[in-house]
Image (cartoon, rainbow, N blue to C red; front, side, top):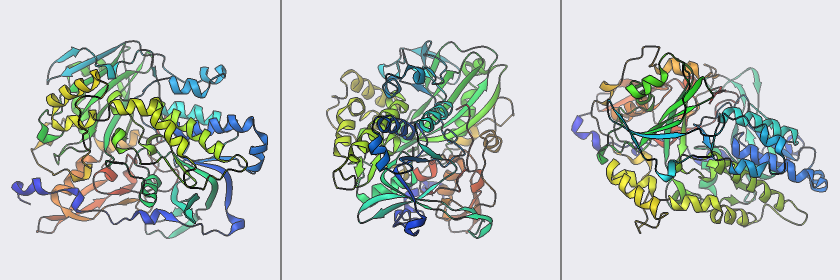
Length: 573
């Protein structure tokens, strides 16, 4: 394809062969073969686990309701090997929500694994060679917040949930949302033991219908069933959802870091035409480790922009190199972050038999780089809403059964804080300097200025351009900088090579779209194949590399659940 025509190409013009109707079904198992539970939670992250813990607390004080819910009052399905396996976050966490979850239970709160409170902080504007410290904006002030490993914390929350009576089903993917007579009645779990052509192997195990009175979707970013539910029940927000992509490494370092660090600027370009929004974090994890990562908005336009390679380039900066000097990389991971904010929240956070929590409900404050406490708080409130609906005489399947939950989220501190920064992410579509000025006005006035509302441009509609960006990426030296395949190995990826393909994309697309996918993917799932001579090429897939970051769903494809237990095995992230 001629270079001059590249700007007209958009991934949106080549949608994947997928319909959300594929993820909606009625129960198919015979009545006596269905797994019946009271409340079913999909997702073993902070939102789902907090929901399970709170339900356990409520049912412990109400044995009559617990008895009515049957042998398994609360169940949770998690597609990873265990809760925490697929969780990736900075993470500096506001402890407000977890303190409330364990209110009156100091022994449980005291057991939460943390690296302590934030010891200090610095925000830096980077140029190619310099790091200029600037006053931290109010949104990046973290005094009193905790440094945590989100994967370790979620393993602890899973222990508390199980101790409170939740039946946790790990290595269980949620393939379909079960809907009957207009209400959600559970999920269908995925098959196990199928080959590349979906043929049953010797260890084949069919999925099962897991039916429940209330189903809580807490899938996290770009959730498979969440997307289907939004379509089926007409729950999409006023603006389309958008995402960022973060790539993270954990390093064992020679000297401790005495503060948390955020950076802006280099290696991103500041002009609005590139749409390069993002930045970095470097957080201490005790005296001998740091986590560092780079995040980019997935509305960027350069075919060759790559979050993984930006992180490698970022590490070559003298300021960062000094922090890592004498250290070694011990972990790597990648994940998308929901960033549409207030404008993109679902129009309702519930439907008959269904509740949305955490990132499934769009609850991430990108301006403050916070989502964990939103997940915990919404999970707790979802549990209370589910519990209220299960009281004698109530019907969780009626229309409007969860309106009170929706109201609690929108008018409580979660909704209020999201509304204050509702236009901040969108402001940076106008470039670094204009966006920074607008963001400052929004911060000072708590979102009252500017007076107009901004709009979200879907990530997939970004017109593509070329600038030879990849020529600036450093080559992998195996010490400071690393390639994608060695990084996938460092993620502990457990996906079988002979699994069915779980990535849906249009396989013949313009060269620019194919190369954009190849550069975008941090795990080297996509490669450019045969050139057809008409400006289009085939796209080759290696789905076993996939770490389920979700970026392809944002940029023109669809990630569906692979076999349960597949994907990364994060332990330090």
